[in-house]
Length: 507
Image (cartoon, rainbow, N blue to C red; front, side, top):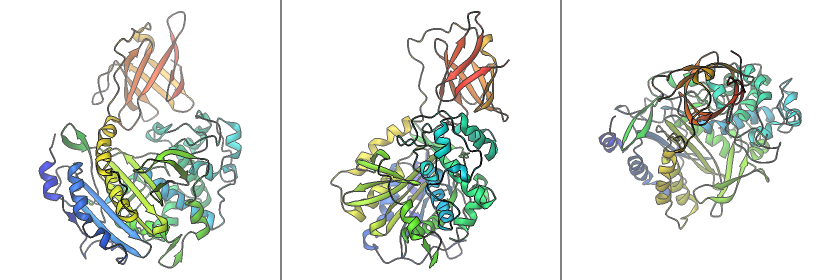
């Protein structure tokens, strides 16, 4: 384990881009300059507080850039500085960009927010037949399709084609009735992204390049994980390990449209300028103002709980982002998290200003801390010690990565181990092979798991009675509880996963 204290003290200051950098930012804005004169000092101190190896912070108005600076280093043990051209994964902040990608399509008349998806994706189906017939882009982008929250992320690990994932949507269990409530769905954004791909007769990645990155001159951005590694100026992931910060392998989000965008600070300031200028960039209309207004219009019925640093109870969802009030000001926001990275974009449209924060540390609340300070400088002091509140929340965020332990009074299994071993099949996930013995490098377990044609690995350990906990290779994949079905003769006919659903034993 490597302690980052010395590194962070040395690199807590910001690094700005030189005249030789690949990409220059837009003309500097004179608005709000006094409010942010010492902001780099706050960012540097906060970087140290949260032991974040490196970060980028950009603040823009519709007229230009106020701040565009890198802080710290590319990764644990690195001496290379983060700058405005450093590539980061955006994680779920990608969803906001996907919404604007689709906004260009709607502006051009190639799609409509409220036309059933079957008009664009022939044969599209969901387990809820009514939802499959009537679901629209708006339903997917506002998380109101009825798909279970955070479901089916493992499909992105299995090297399935986009067509194969679309075909399997009909096997995904609903978590609520259609349009009944807000349920955050990565699959929903994958589906929405495929509408753009079909309309353009190409991949989602190429459509994104055509519709967003090229017109905005976002030359270092891409919709593919591989974009991150096109040169050496990219971050590496990190995570907290006790009092130390250690390297963490980055991951592909796996579902197009939901979390796969790679970008830089400089590129993101261009995209934010587009949004703040109601769809216009450098005098050119990329998205019509009416369509951009609709992207930023909250759904009157899709509440998403307490929003923002003041926990606004009236927080609402909208297409690709969320909205809440900070004092008297309406805020539009989207954040993201993947292994080793955290991101956030926060806009205050009526004040024509926004911030983007990118950080290379797993589950850090550093982006929220910087965003809170930004909001207090733009909208006025909240009367709450937001920095203390957010720091208190950090332990809870880290706890999300800690695996639960079996019940202390768990009952022994009645099924024999040799009956559990074998091949199982699911319409949604395909084949799963269970064999005796754990997989090295994951954790101790009684059985190993091999999922799909890529044999994605995991382990199975006893939980309680005939239930076992499945733990997958990537810590971002939620553990599952498998309850095995034991027949009268002691044989196993299958299992039901709380997350993955039904699997039948086939051999």
